[in-house]
Image (cartoon, rainbow, N blue to C red; front, side, top):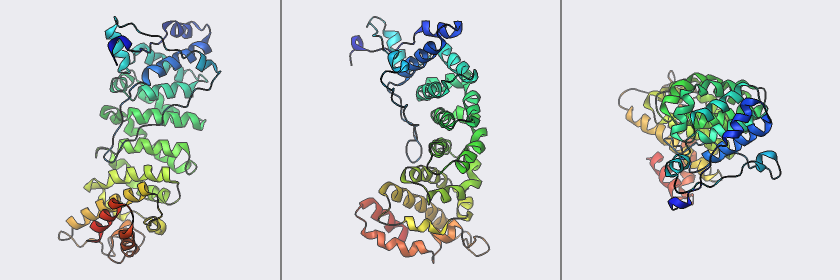
Length: 344
């Protein structure tokens, strides 16, 4: 797209001043949120993990006829203002925008969900990730994890998910991991809260730095895996694949209790993405196991209980060993290749 055709999404300063002055506050809030959201909705980068991305869901569509929809018009920027165009096209926010959005969250405004969605979209850009942290936004957003409204908690998690793509942000966000794990455990299965929590943990487990915080939650993840839908299963497996790529986490994984029904997922009727990630997870475990075969007699009765991951998935007499050969006839080439490696 040429420079003269650049579309800028400028925030309306008058709306911001309206908020401060208290005149037309609701209108000003919606205008601020919708226009900042428009700024940040362009060209956001994709997050990544060892396995694959875990970016938060995009904002809900504006409903026609609502005040928010009516004030979300986008002004055109002339080609002469190239510097401003570059700034807006990168999704960068100004400090005063962030400060006002954070102030809205702390004021108890009814528009918390809209503000969080806006911050979450803007947090997909590295500049904004740093800016929100530097302005003290991480604890403000994380404080809403205990909000009584589930939709507020879910959007806070989505915002933190995008913010967690920044390594320096993770250093501050790690203190909230226990609270996120509690949300997973206490929320309804397949709920938005569980999914948003797992997305955040996926990003937090990309590197080995904070994986130890999930050390005691392996059984929780495995239990969720056998009762959830495909969308949640995929997200659980993203976390497990990340953890299983770290040799220092292996003893915790193989000693964790696993539901006996876990092996039933290794079936040709299982959703392909779920099955491939399951095989990747077990493949990582087997790679670790093979590297220790001559170092120590792992797998003895005193080391791993009957219901442990080791007994269920890795032991020579495990049910999984008997189920894998049937997958050699799976129509997907990658599934067959992974199964063949596991059987050798």
